[in-house]
Each structure stands twice: as C-alpha cells, then as structure tokens.
Length: 343
Image (cartoon, rainbow, N blue to C red; front, side, top):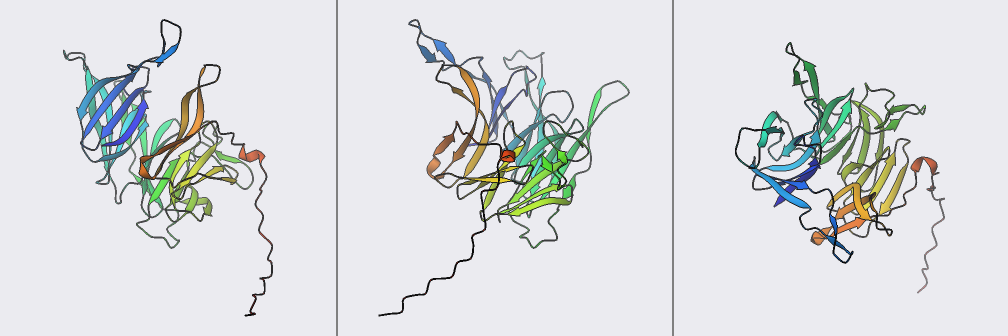
C-alpha cells in the first residue's frame, strides 16, 4: 500500500526524481526520462513505456503517512521530511557512495528526529529570510514550527542546527475540541486592513513575518502570524485540507462534502462545488497535450472520491479574485406565508 508520493531533486542530479513510500516500510525511487512521447516509423506518436525507470529501493520505518520536501541544510537541494503515525517527524537525505560496486551508488540516511505532543495532521514548508521553516499541524487548531539555522563553522563548512520547536495555538481562547483534526499551510499571502502586504510567496515586503493558515474539521479558518490571529472565517463545511494555488497568491480550502474554496490575500472567497464528496485532494501544474500537439503544464485539481475514483478538473478559467466584486447579498427578510388551515 502506497502512503506518500513526491518528486524533486533529492539526489542532487539537477533533475526530478520520484519517490514512493509504502506502508510496509520501503522507499522506491524512479528516474524520469526527458520525454514521454516517441515517434513511430510512420510518423505517428506513441507513448514510451520506459519513461519512468526504477532506480533504488531501501527499507525505512513502516509507519510513514505523509512527506514534504525542504532544503533544511542550505545546500540548495531538498531533503525529505516524513510524518509518522507515532507523532514523529524524521528528515532523510540522499548520500552518495562512489566506493560501492553496486549500480545504485548511495542511500537515504536520517538527519533529524522530532517528537510532538499530538497526532500530526500534515506538514508544510516555506522560506523565511532564506531559511527553511517546517510547520507541523497539531490537533485543536494548533501547529508547531521548526526553523533551521545554517551557518559556517571554523572550517568553512555548512552546519545546520534547528531552533527549539515553537508551538503556536492562536485559537486557544476559543472553545474548541482539543482533538479536532487540523491542517496547516505555511507562507501564505495576506494583506492587512490598510492594504499593506504582510507576506507574499513571490515578493515579501516584510520577511520577518511568516504568515500561515490553519483550518479545522469544524469548518474554521484562521490566518495567523505566530500566536496572533490576523483573520478568521467560519464555514458551514467540514474542512479536510488547505493547499497552495499554483502561481497565484491564493490558497485552497477543501471540504469533505465536495466544496472547494479559493481564498486570496484580500479575504475574498470563491466557492466551487464538485459532483461528489472528497476524500483526497491536490492542486498543481499537470502536463497536458494541447490541440496543436504541444506539451504544456496547466493548473488542475485532482480529487479522490468514494469508491476509489479520481477526477481531474483541468482547463479551469478561474478569475482573479482581486478583480471580482462580492456577488453574495444577505437576503431580505420576507414574511412567512400564512398556512392554509382549511380542511
């Protein structure tokens, strides 16, 4: 059973490598070929089944359920951080070994280990002052922040240390189930009431502030800076995840009922309704083939529904929320109709 999948330059080969982790405690890596379309002798296009090639296999702890990529040691290449069912987060790094005679010259080694008070909902990474920060969601609307400190030692070698974990519980004063499922998204963009941008993924005017969004299963959304709530909103849905919107200063809220909310930095929300309930969701740039035969990456939503069905929502013309005006109006109170009591 596959528990988590990811892709990135984790082997320092200046190209993406796909990793797959199974519930039995194995991590498999696959190399991606430059192209996945080949030409037949008659000029027609045919798919190349060798586009994804197995590269390595290694045993790791068997209770991994999530992962995120982040450059925590400052070498310019991402490491893998795994979240486990025993409230532990471990970081793994690929280490080359040129002295071996094996075809695979390297393996994954453990760098760090952190233990947390509650079950981990998800992991999210961002950059603050050029240093990686990891946010670990905790039950009850809280989260924990892990920040790396990269410095040069006396031998001019990079050394990585982590600040003590900092727990943020900005909604502690509100009545909330302490075991409520929580999801966190780091590095969101948000504007204050005055309109000044607090933080943006692309251009940050104040890099000392790292804004994050927290959503809970009870339908609450909070945009926070450390322990300060900048904005909060209560929906009528059971929220199961919060995700970044690719190439836009917006983020996505997902409800189990099938509702998808798009939120921008001006507190504007757009609600989309899918056809079925959602068990899993992701958003990203997915490769497609246009009508002209060109290979393009376009933003798409992928949902997992009941029965193991997967839906891909592509070619979505979602407008920029900052250019939209509110279309919702509070309905006027109408007198209730007089019931017909005649027999």
